[in-house]
Length: 377
Image (cartoon, rainbow, N blue to C red; front, side, top):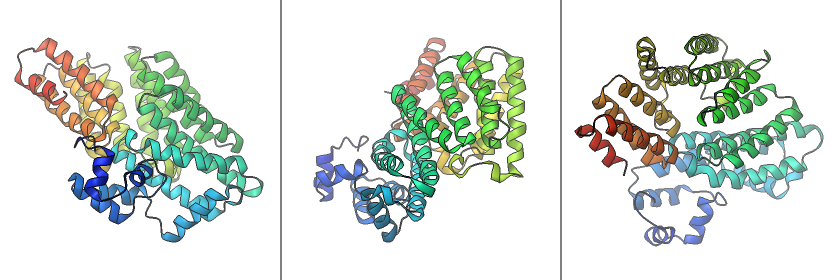
């Protein structure tokens, strides 16, 4: 709708649907059924994207599963294991949808559904309560990430605190480490090397935490050291992280289903981002380029189109800039710009506009730079 300049009322007229009903679909109060998805896809000329997203976002639930979730929402105290399994399926689908469409596109529906999960958590008691809290912590962690990715830091912190509280109640050390890592990542994004390093160390210190989370925490510490300009410490922790990540192939049980993104390609890209901060050192610049290229290509196709993967392209463009290759930097940045437009990612657009300004200052007459600036308007 943003790309087509279409309002909700205009979409309703074109698709022959009541705008108030469409508003409920957008807020997550109503499902996007296949016929509606097909009609909206045609009206927007989306080439199947809306239909595919609707199928994923609804979790491919059967009518019986939808009915079970509706009943659980109306009777939160009496939620059963089947309802919790359905909620887990919906959350998994929403995570994959966010990979494809960006955080802003799924935030409102996720918050609407999180409100139901929160009610279930407040009402749950007895033997089923730990399972309810397990689902609730996953939703809270995901909502914390979504708020962080749209730069709503206060709400992000609140949701992460909620996830931490749930994880502490049921003794889930892996979720505790996950939340600490995400808070450390938020500090890294804010340019705060000290908190990034400290939170990463706290996340990695418990050997009972899943291997995937300990690998990420080690990588995050490496990113913190790189931000601080300590190349030796950064290389050491990056190496530790890649060593831990390499063990996941033989120990798949050490990666929780809700942290599926901790893949070999992900860790290579993370290493590349960390090393890109040290790209003034030629050998580390070469390592950063190689890691970002190989890691990005190793990501699943749908994840390569996510706004967070677009950040890897932006980092690669920065490395090319440091190498003095304006043409290559602009070519990679244009690919990232296409992702930013499709996902509506203000964060990624901001990164690319900063890059374009830096490139323009160095190469004011370069036609590639002019093309990039035009693409970011």
